[in-house]
Amino acid sequence: MLDCWNSLRERNDQRENVEMKLSTVKRISKESLDPSGKALPAWVDNLLSPLNDYLEKVYIAISGRLTFGDNIYSSSITVELTHNVELKVNPQTVNPVLGCILINAGGNMVTGFKWRNIATSSVGLTVQLSGATTATCTVVFLLK
Image 1 (cartoon, rainbow, N blue to C red):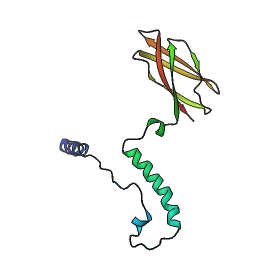
Image 2 (tube, one colour):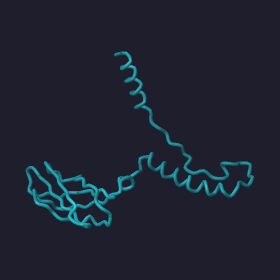
Image 3 (cartoon, helix red, strand yellow):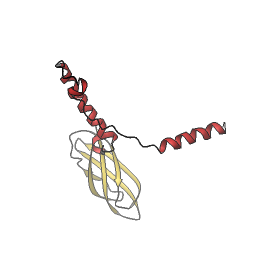
């Protein structure tokens, strides 16, 4: 059993050292489908357009250029929060807020974070801090 485990670990270590190389092909043209120069049916254009759009988006995603905003429907704000005092904020969106994530408290230690929907365009944020009474906080609102 130990030999099997070591073998799997060695194979995994080898895989981690291999870098994935992306193809340089980002678009498919009609000419690349039929290099003889014959006219292809018109429906090929209707197929290639959305296919090429999709390929470009996948290429961007797997080449490491996909941003948080591309992947998660959200908005963010930076506000000054005071320990155990609820602050009513406007997430500046018409979409319902599904959740909130506190991603930065200006280097202060956060011991708790709560949020609640107050109204359609208002969210209440409360932070518990250790060693500080206020902090400049960045909050991400996850939207529906």
